[in-house]
View (cartoon, one colour):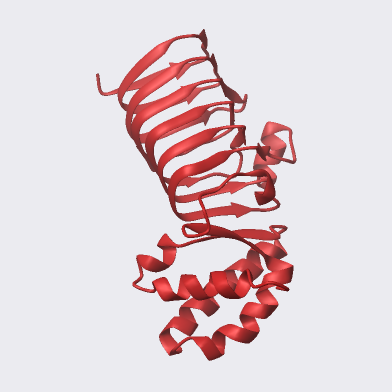
Length: 231
């Protein structure tokens, strides 16, 4: 088997060994299992929302994901690697994750055309648990409440409050970093300011984004400055 396509189905308690890519169109699943996804996953093709409720995704390497109009509610993602998951319309409610997530973006608001097509102006991204994940390049956009999610400890990532923390970073980083480090940090700060302008008042700063560039000390300084008492 080299993949699985599910169109307009409603399933309860079914176990799928995918052994390849997955495409789902306007379907619903409850207490189902999906094992062995590899490659691209299209979770919610079509206009009608696909719903996964209480489902398990396990032992999977999911790349170049096209989420579409999909809701994951009370789902578990166990021992997964997810990369390039760039979403404007996916909803995650009370889901838990273990494994690795890289280059992923979740948004609290769909784009204009998605809002018109799917009939909603907000995406639910609430109550999710990522404490067992290795994270890098994971971003949240347009108003996701990071206080409502659970993340790995501060040695791996921390939540930066844009209005509170960025002015301090702008003031203190130039004197603490050398020229190359300072430029990298300035680029990130500018990105976080752009996020804030679009409604994202909190950003998730991740250690791997800096250690993989050979700059673990920059992450340590960001964390020190942003989380200093009185910051």
